[in-house]
Amino acid sequence: MMNMCMRYVRDKDKSAAIVNDGFLKVFKKIHQYEYKGSFEGWIRRIVFHCMSDAIKKEAKYVKFMVFEDYETQTASNHGIENLYAEDILRMIEDLPAASADVFILFAIKGYSHKEISELKNISIGTSKWHVSDSRKRLQELILKKYNYRSNAG
Image 1 (tube, rainbow, N blue to C red):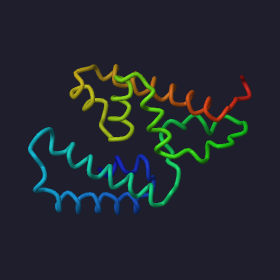
Image 2 (image 1 turned 90 degrees about the vertical axis):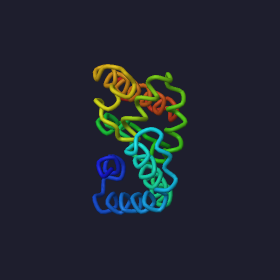
Image 3 (image 1 turned 30 degrees about the horizontal axis):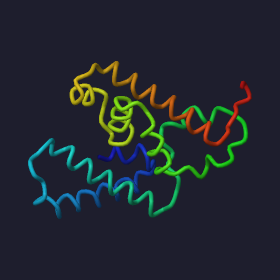
Image 4 (image 1 turned 45 degrees about the vertical axis):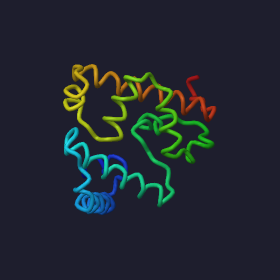
């Protein structure tokens, strides 16, 4: 759970606080677990919701892994600094369903490619391809939305 939080919050103390809050909610809601699906997945969902609540409270934009290549490009970035998690989640809905599912499991919920391959009955390579393809498509959608042009184009 800590790894999942660190992927987005990138601050060890804040991530630890989020995980602690998440597990507090898990213990308070343990009676609501219905023994359907994996227990770890249930916990992961609660911790993820705590993390998204913390991000919303701070009203900071979320730096998803979509922006890994962004910092190496130079040009005007009007509007991109105001991109919020909700914007990206809406863009994820525009991805092909299979790619969106795998991307959400990997990038948002923190599943490994091995876990995704077992869960979706696909190869690890296919899981990696879906994440890579989703990342590229999201970058294109973001850059298109904000009329961003690299120096090469």
